[in-house]
Length: 280
Ligand SMILES: NC(=O)C1=CN([C@@H]2O[C@H](COP(=O)(O)OP(=O)(O)OC[C@H]3O[C@@H](n4cnc5c(N)ncnc54)[C@H](OP(=O)(O)O)[C@@H]3O)[C@@H](O)[C@H]2O)C=CC1
Ligand SMILES: Cc1cn([C@H]2C[C@H](O)[C@@H](COP(=O)(O)OP(=O)(O)O[C@H]3O[C@@H](C)C(=O)[C@@H](O)[C@H]3O)O2)c(=O)[nH]c1=O
Ligand SMILES: [Mg+2]
Image (cartoon, rainbow, N blue to C red; front, side):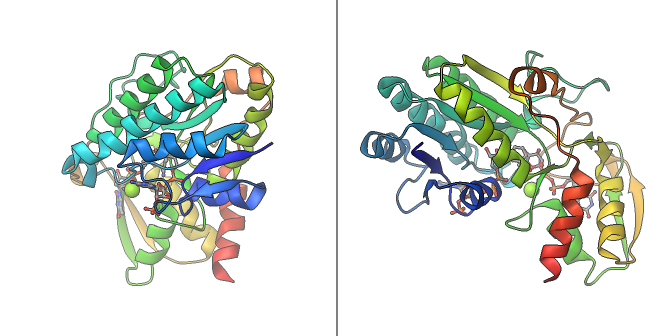
């Protein structure tokens, strides 16, 4: 199956390349800030399946660059999906827990109303709508708190901070599911098969278990890496950021298991592997 991936250096893009024979396009061949280049790439390659693993993911910076974030997170996936619809190619797209406002404590179902708190979440929500509007056969896979040995993520931030700090304050009122990039890549590749064989697709959730606060995630990172850093839990109000984050990032992943046989990944097991790989 000829698989075209947008994104080359990102966490999920790298995991896809590690797990399958894919054609991964970097900025030089498909620039999401110029959506037409993405449509052109699909028309040129005529793949059997397209996976968009590229996005504007800098949550705080997006508050100052709403136009660029919108082009990359909405106009570009919209253009990709339109090209896929024209050529009858299934399209897999990744979205985020940040499309929700984080109210309550119950896990959000895929059909729950969205209400993003910041520019990143809003542009990702608009991207979902743009993909659906094209009529392309698609999967939108919402995930959360992605980590891996590559790229920028919370695990690497914590390990970097631990080199100079023996104590850290980390928010303990935002709860979500850390999700290993490798498991997301695997889930996408599994979903690609039924989708290309006629599965109707739709919006699905995929996040690591068990849910945890960023504070307890940080503690587990230091425990697993054998670093002694004293982590103090603080409320979000004491850690001001340009973009507000949802307090409840829990995603209900039941339909992903029912429809595709894919169970939520155990993030602690993956964390240990990743820390081991970062060590060597
Ligand atoms: N990271 C997370 O915690 C979460 C991510 N997601 C979603 O998962 C998907 C994958 O995220 P992740 O792997 O973490 O992403 P990363 O932040 O690791 O990488 C983003 C990728 O997008 C590429 N990109 C950004 N702007 C452009 C552009 N203008 N043209 C071409 N490529 C561009 C980057 O390329 P370059 O290296 O050249 O900048 C990079 O390859 C995204 O849709 C994201 O919204 C969902 C939930 C959580
Ligand atoms: C570094 C640091 C962060 N924090 C807080 C800030 C924030 O609320 C939380 C997580 O910080 P980050 O900035 O790493 O996380 P953030 O960039 O918001 O991560 C998000 O990225 C996007 C792309 C997504 O789609 C989301 O699912 C989510 O993974 O931890 C502390 O409390 N103490 C600290 O020392
Ligand atoms: Mg970040």
